[in-house]
Amino acid sequence: QVQLVESGGGLVQAGGSLRLSCTASGRSLRTAGSYAMGWFRQPPGKEREFVSAIRWSSGHSFYADSVKGRFTISRDKSQNTVYLQMNSLKSEDTAVYYCAADPTIIQSSLFDGRNYDYWGQGTQVTVSS
Image (tube, rainbow, N blue to C red; front, side, top):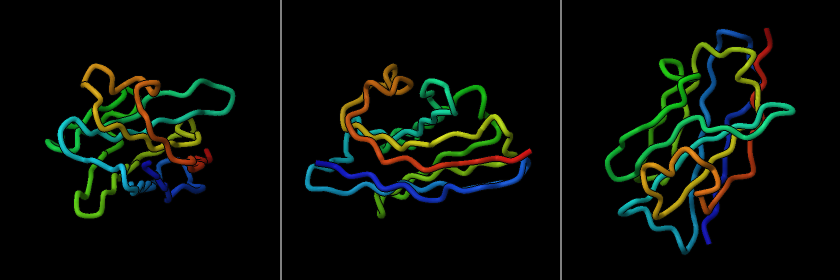
């Protein structure tokens, strides 16, 4: 099994910044090959949506249009940790943010949460206007 533990959520004013972290661990953790990690979010009363993803081996990153230019995903291979730096936060960024991981996900599947095997518990991000 693989465990994902998120941290870094909180309350911030519009225009502010937060950095989320997600650390993966477990006997089944395999970060070679097609392993990728992603961030999804679920705003209040809405469906879960893709935010960003990163291919572990290459560092190639992907973003939802709504966060491009404001959010940056990165990873620390030595710590098995993925980060989401969120700048210029808006009230519409308010959501529960979830970290996800999958060892064999293909690029076209990165944007759909149904394709990820492992999920974190979620961390609340609230942006006040």
